[in-house]
Image (cartoon, rainbow, N blue to C red; front, top):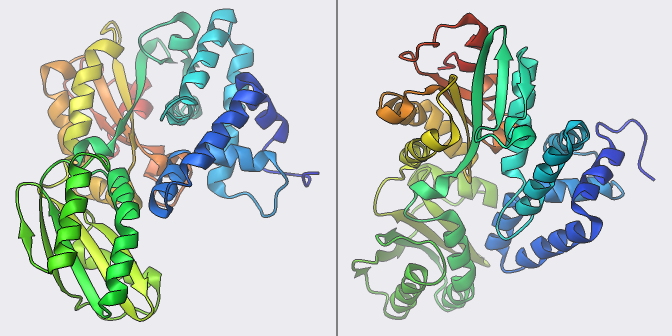
Length: 394
């Protein structure tokens, strides 16, 4: 039996699963569990990617600890989905269930739907009336918000930070799981403190292709201990000069400070011996560029231009340091404003950006729940009624 006074409704979670079907839900949770067994690093990536589903499933069972804030947020959004389903007409219910089924298939997640629900809740808290235009009427935009006599269309979309990286973090996790046994065997035969530096020059998006090529070059380097450099990757093996940290957490912090936020890191330990693998892309990550390209692609398709349009973007697959850095370096602002100044941005009154840190209520979350960039050239840019939704936050 669940304890009383929980910060979420167990009945709402059961009702949420009921929208999908118990068998389909259990099958999806089992599938995620099997995929997470592929390796320690790739398994962690998969569990993070499907954190919403796993949080809901954990809260449905007997609780062995108090629910985390992130888990409570997941439960609240699941309850929002149930409440929305009850309000929708027949066609809207069909569309919502279709989205849920899509979210729980292949490599999809609940993030797009929950981003939509959170965006709607955010606008309601700001005093707007919110209609789910895409679900209720099949509109190309997701929401229609109203403030006084003014209206704005809101299109919610998700863009992965991986699209701006030459080396995908998921692919890096797969590669390190693949080679860890060989690295550990080599470290056993070569005790000491070693650093393997890798510069990846060919797009790494999976264990096959460039991933397999990098794997072969790592093998060759370990066998010969000779520096390797070609169009796929540059590899160099040298002593690790970093001071010995007291624990793994401090080690990773020191490595991150040493190699920077864009580095891909792995640590192999055997007794007192240590092998650190530090990989960098052959070019700077272009996450902001990926955002701008996505904005340019969806603006003409997701907004009618008949009313001011807001593009509410969710940046997926980013970590704490990267999300903070993108905001502090104004990379998101620069690319968003470049988009707004172009032809495709004319119908857009504002671009907003959010991430899992806002979705889950983490301390790295942006103030006011999102980062906003107003298009000052839009005719309705100075409309006071729309200001809470469009006024720039930086």
